Length: 83
View (tube, rainbow, N blue to C red):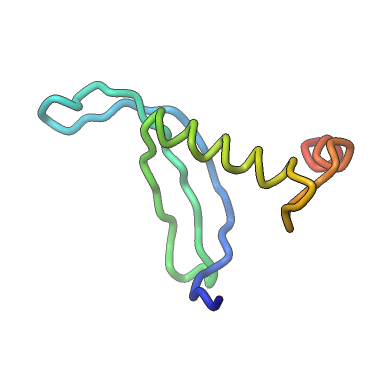
């Protein structure tokens, strides 16, 4: 399968609160700030709900820890990358 896409440089992941008027005002969010390549496209920010954060965490955990996954990394390698 072919998918058009861009590599990303992750700049920040931080918490925030929704400031839109209405029923979601004050709800917690995760701000995911990144820069796609080429860098002339500027920085982008995605706003994730806590539910979306859980889904992303669980999916990445499965992809990194499933022996059948192309992204599988032994825990030792994950620790090495983390430091």
